[in-house]
Length: 267
Image (tube, rainbow, N blue to C red; front, top):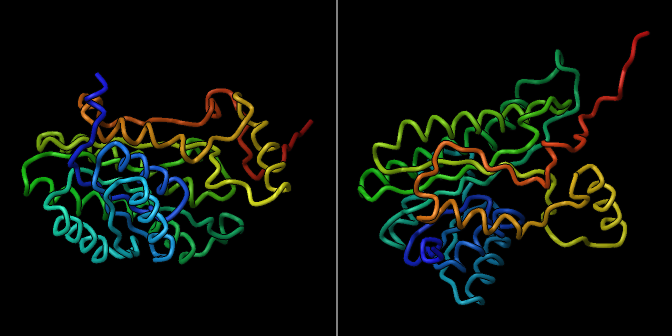
């Protein structure tokens, strides 16, 4: 059974791989035997991720990429194929951008477009570029997108959960459109997860307080996403596609989600 979790020889792209959850996924995939190509906009962060993987005995390369530019995403995938001769997995993890704090009717076009670009459009560009290569090589593959628990709640910062909600739908469409080519698509839905160790006591105390919103009474740690990433990339999940994998300490099941709205009551 454990052999089905091995990724020996597989070539996998991880966007947003310079830090946080993307770095954790890249490290775990490499530890399981994958050859990893990490992408992000900041070269220094990419260099750190590649160095960590190589120090642990893994294989990694990097391509500086702005995932909001479809041509750069296409070039990223082509670079991975040139380096490793194949593409077996695409982890479209890049995202972010909180938008602006404005009333709904005053929300500016450009702010909405920016959040959609980095979260939803980037996932589409990544999946499309990966699928093209996977179909051409005829060996199938996996696409794993990253959404957010905010996609399942209302939120004052609505642009981000709107984009991440689109990622859920996109993943289901990828799964149903690509299954005939042996390509599976799933989505990871993290809850409150620390992106790195706390920098000081004040940040540690804030994280402890934020963890009180979650049934397990703590935040998740970035490295805890690694085993899930390996499972979804491996043959252990070969009958799994079109699914959402929520990793949030029970937050959506029974936690309290800050929404940015104070309670309002009319008597």
